[in-house]
Length: 220
Image (cartoon, rainbow, N blue to C red; front, side):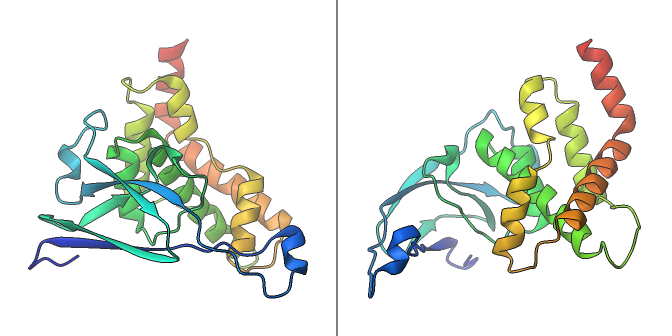
């Protein structure tokens, strides 16, 4: 982000490695894929005043090169990018979001898929962190106060359907967590990962114990 010029530039890189029988081909060159990416920007400074049912302006970027950039003009403050809205392209997107950025997307993004994806990323970070600490400590998982506040807002938001709230508050599957461990280059310890998953679920349950009861009473 260039505050002086009020411009924001995103640079994309795509990787399309050989898979399956392609691995047996010598000197195989795979051209870049054509990837349509729907992008929106959320203002960090004004996110709290934005409601998810008020859609932000989105644009479609067609990625056709290995590396490609797009520059937004007249951007008044540092934004948070909302990438691949609606899961318009079946690809994995990797961006170095802070926990605060993910909480903002989870609370305020107009795109339902990216709200869910932000929750999945947040949960995954806590589970993997707990897994790495599994052999060092039996202490319970501690969820950040801002994260608890975010999940409380979602749980008690009656404008969201119960099914969508369920999706936002469901931890990642064991399979997706195993994939995340593999991508990080760590050795897979299924028992440690299972224990970390359980600890994170318990932390979420205990942190919002009264809110779970309140929601259950409202729905029954």
